[in-house]
Length: 115
Image 1 (spheres, rainbow, N blue to C red):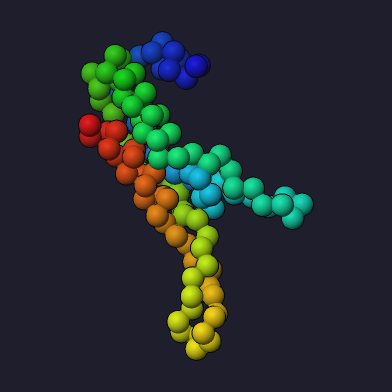
Image 2 (cartoon, rainbow, N blue to C red; image 1 turned 90 degrees about the vertical axis):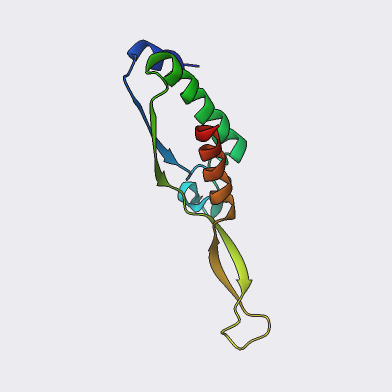
């Protein structure tokens, strides 16, 4: 409720979006462990990124003829355990980054930019 009125008041010629996706659901870039308890962070969903991008574009339409530049700034993915086929053991698992949610968040942002 405060950001968009301030943006209108500032009246920029161009808006730069530093599009960070660390705040996405379960993204490790926004996670922390405190006193042995894991916290995943803000947990934004693709529809949250889409909504925020559309709101910024609406402000840009009013103050700077819709001029918006967006640059990917961050986002890592979520931890996932997958079968380790190289271990030789039938049930060995390894921890890897799954970037599916990161991709969905980035796609929602880009769709809002191009629609």
